[in-house]
Image 1 (cartoon, protein in one colour):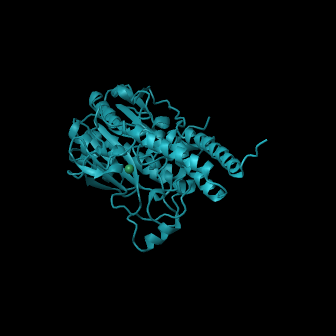
Image 2 (spheres, each protein chain N blue to C red; image 1 turned 180 degrees about the vertical axis):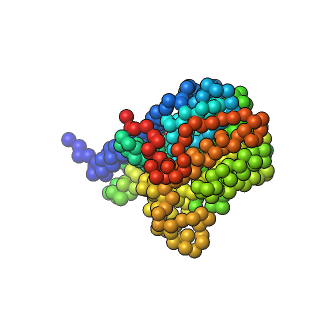
Image 3 (tube, rainbow over the protein chains, first blue to last red; image 1 turned 90 degrees about the vertical axis):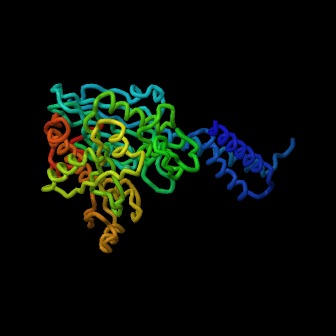
Length: 49
Length: 377
Ligand SMILES: [Zn+2]
């Protein structure tokens, strides 16, 4: 059960990161940071690593 | 037509790159879930699955092969556990060598090369461990997985803040929740790691295993290394083994601490009738003082920082620039196992187990452990 709570939190964070990546104007470095964090979160949400 | 804003274009490109990275990493990490083949030799009479002794393990990452090498001549039975800690490759490789080479002439030998099968599917965070290492055989190089000390968190997650060992109430750090060698005797309805421990305990009880030996490795600076750790009931077997191999190499025999719980040499001795022993060799690739960590270090055991540490007496085993190769470490494990079998009639009920024609320590060191393994297919 707790596992799914963690997964839900990770998925929620992933959504926030991706949304802010599309909203932040002009700052490409912010977007790169967000993309890297999204990779890690996506691997976690898909239970790959 | 409305122009698409630049930041949306860059975000889209980066999203696509992120997805590509995830797909690539999924392939790399996914490959680790497929175990490399072990080729049963002529001595193997049956291949069973651990889930036979704990049905809820079936279909999980904890299920693994149990190789049975029945000589056909009644005698004692021995269980060898490799891969309790998948980052200790000599324990795993020695068990693989038994499956592929050993032909017992008396009694029954059971071998579980990947005791914590899940631990073989990942590596430990922050250790920079290689994912695989190669062993030279007569027919080419065979690749083996270098794993994690503990169960993959993907299979058992999250850890509790502290780990309370079920049968003793002992409290350890939360990360030990996934350590198979803190989980014995295990629980049928526990975590995946506890289920694996339970299945091994059941196998020992149901198959009347006389001797259980758990193969490990440890950092060269650790105090319990080049050692046999034995439950008090198995101490005489440990001493007989120590004296039997004395001409080839030095090994110490220590008694299992009575207040350290969850380990094979404590709980399997307390909860079953088996003689429980554990062996440690010195593995620089898991030591704290090591430098560059790669497959070469795993196999050669050569590390210049350990040479320096040895000059300060900071290493508890003899160490020089020749290193401690995986062949030498496997030779220790394999020749101690043969010696234990040979000495077994002198302890317990006088029942005999003989591993048959096994190479001597010096032969394994000279020929390399790959000489006794099947060629890659
Ligand atoms: Zn170990």
